[in-house]
Length: 109
Image 1 (tube, rainbow, N blue to C red):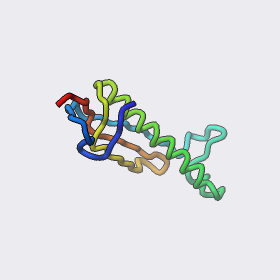
Image 2 (cartoon, helix red, strand yellow):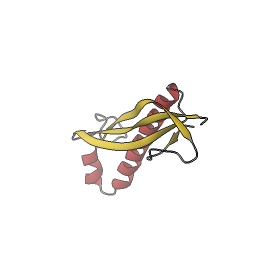
Image 3 (tube, rainbow, N blue to C red):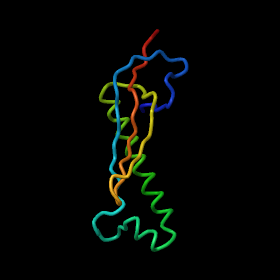
Image 4 (cartoon, rainbow, N blue to C red):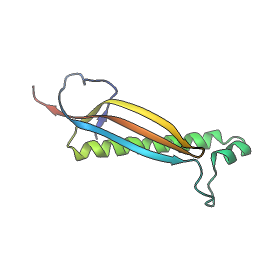
């Protein structure tokens, strides 16, 4: 498992920088009317949709973190330091979720 931290250093570890990595997910609040799914507006209109929306966004964040870890693994990383999280509305029904950081390898020092 690739460790994700929002600090520059990892206590007790000497680090070799491998490069910038990111995990990006586009979360669609609506899937174009597919049966069983609801857009953000529909959830609000139904009331109590906040829990479902929160759950959907948590899943999207987890997916973005997994993509970040996968990108780091491809570089042979043990960890990602300086991890940051960003999200932005791309449209009224789509949110971009981005985790990024610096992939590092533990080295003997």
